[in-house]
Length: 289
Ligand SMILES: [Ca+2]
Ligand SMILES: [Ca+2]
Image (cartoon, rainbow, N blue to C red; front, side):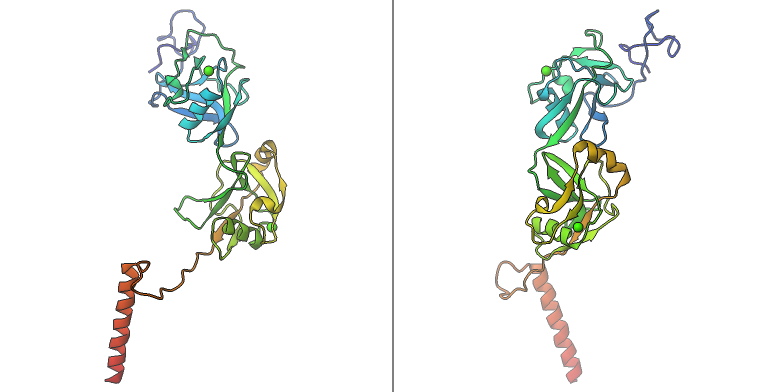
């Protein structure tokens, strides 16, 4: 069907449009009311704000759109909670979609930007060059690292580094053992790790933060290593042409239990130990016989 309140172009939907408006129609979808997405950015934490409203995906007018409004949009797409950056000039394109909301008045606790008492389509004017975009920011400390992959692995993955409240990637140029050791040390894997090249664990849609990392292995944080830092825009520019760094950290070896009565020995390992002891006992009996 076609949404009732949208711009219509007589040639594309003559039967449903009000007469002679010279407007356009948009197909209804079955998106969920209030669902929000960021479109047209170079990575997954930025883009034009699009919201599902009355059955269609539409954009939002920059009029009255502040960082509190952006915060609700960012929360909806799962990034935050640091102060987002607002672009009020169709920076990420106008998307050629209807501008469905304007003058948002979010207080910070709303579930979705549709709950922010906005002006609705038809009750405001908005230039197509004033579609709002945001860059959401994580709350992280510069130098924090994490490993990500799609296989539920905990000690290996693509390296994400926080820089200026944004999680970003490292290229695999000159990525080596000493660099991996520093990452693993930061994550409390004390036995070091190995460098994994070629975007082996995946290449999340994020900006590239570091290139040519050169650790000696003794640094306590990856930010202390020599590297070529990249601006957001530079990182975005080289993203398509590079592979990203991963690491595989060596699992920590736990010291063998010295006291079987101590609570730190799990019942499973105790039973396994008992079973092995029995097998050895049986084997030695058989040898003796
Ligand atoms: Ca506002
Ligand atoms: Ca290196």
